[in-house]
Amino acid sequence: MGTPDRLHENQQGVELSAVEWLLDHFRAKETDRRRMVDELDVGPSDQVLDAGCGPGMWTRLFAEKVASGGGKVTGLDFASDILDYARASFDGDPLGSAVEFVRGDLHEVPFPPETFDLTFLGNCLCYIRDAYDVLEKHKKVTRSGGRMVSKEFDGSAMIFHPVSPVLTLKVVTAAAQALEENAASAWFDNFIGRRTYGMFRDLGLNDVWTRSYAIQKVAPLTEEAKRYIIGNATWYGRTAAPYLSEDERQEWAESFDPESERYVLDRDDFYFCMIETMTVGTV
Ligand SMILES: C[S@@+](CC[C@H](N)C(=O)[O-])C[C@H]1O[C@@H](n2cnc3c(N)ncnc32)[C@H](O)[C@@H]1O
Image (cartoon, rainbow, N blue to C red; front, side, top):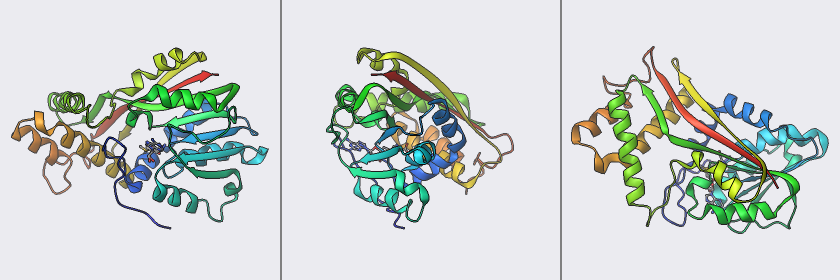
């Protein structure tokens, strides 16, 4: 099975994620994400669209819900090597017959109107400058009475204890500042989670609800949780760097460097927390 290691870029040049990091990310949060999918009460015959499916980890959770009842999950993504990985991950798997992967753009959504009972977008609206356009297109392919779901995150609440809260808040604020200042050339909405409720209401969806989940990872961490947290912290440090002092940059980097005495992830008191938000509306 191929595991491409290159980073993907969206049209604005924002770095998307390498497949390995997406897998670590998902696996580190799999229990939480299973709970989210359980809360959606997916029907066994449902037709589900997993838009921006990446390596197909959400696709699998949905397939587990529909495979026995004749339903189907369609994964849509524009990154062909990530789709190759997703397809290969179902080779020889009985769930494979309930799954299909299609290459395409979230702005085009290459399916007939009213195809899906449930349209799911997981961690991809954050990369989309015109999220309303993407949501409108997904609304069209969702059947009347069907549901749209957005699962995003909100980067305001980030805890990497025992890294100093003052440093953490500085890094989060500096990253927010850098993203805002670079928005014209490189779009990434690190605070999309708080916006999806209003967006779904603006779209005219019915029965809109939203729920936020505090995703915690505590010591002792699995190796995939460590890689996910290091990847996340590295992104924050790199994004925030122009607005941090040299000392702040160094303290942050060393806190997540296994070779450093400052390394926090092996400490008994390590506690990580961030917010994921799931918003649901009926078409
Ligand atoms: C952060 S990944 C999330 C993957 C998966 N949903 C998950 O949560 O594990 C974002 C995915 O959205 C895809 N993506 C971003 N913009 C897209 C677009 N305009 N059209 C299609 N796919 C897009 C990327 O290729 C990537 O696989």
